[in-house]
Amino acid sequence: MGASGGADTEPGDAKAGGTAKPGPTVTVTGAAKARPAPTVTKTVTAKPEPPKKTEASGPATSFSGDGEYLVGEDIAAGTYKTAGSDGSFGCYWERAKDASGEFGSIIANNNLEGPGRVTLNKGEYFKTNRCAEWKRAG
Image (cartoon, rainbow, N blue to C red; front, side):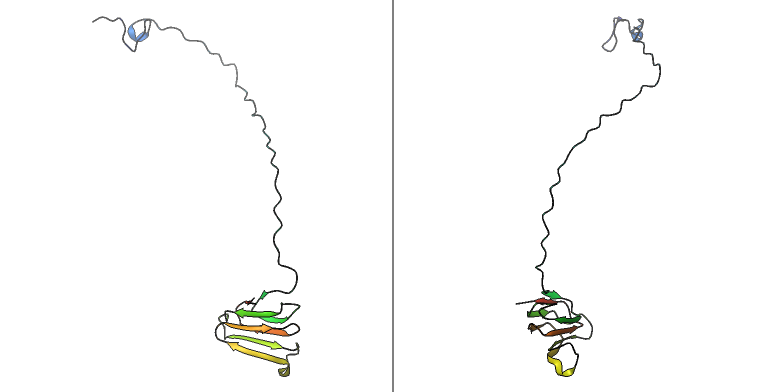
């Protein structure tokens, strides 16, 4: 067989017994300085958030199970419900005609072992101890 060149050799290729063709000469004269990338600024217009809904000003319609509240000022008049005791010795509530703490000022009171309801009228004082949160039911 002859040596006229194969599929992966070209005339003048060193593998085929020819002379290698000279390649291009590259001269590096120093480190190439990279150009900084262009700065791209994107302007985004922010939309303001819609105003958050707030409760209407005035007396609260839900409140803690511990405290003394003036109905019509601290809490709104109406019927309230609670899940009952907060896990302590039972839930105590009291409706009173004033904040004196005297036995004679009590209009009504109760010790709850479970859920309960009470209707509060404007001008009364409502005292609650060891109860879960009270929420207006009507």
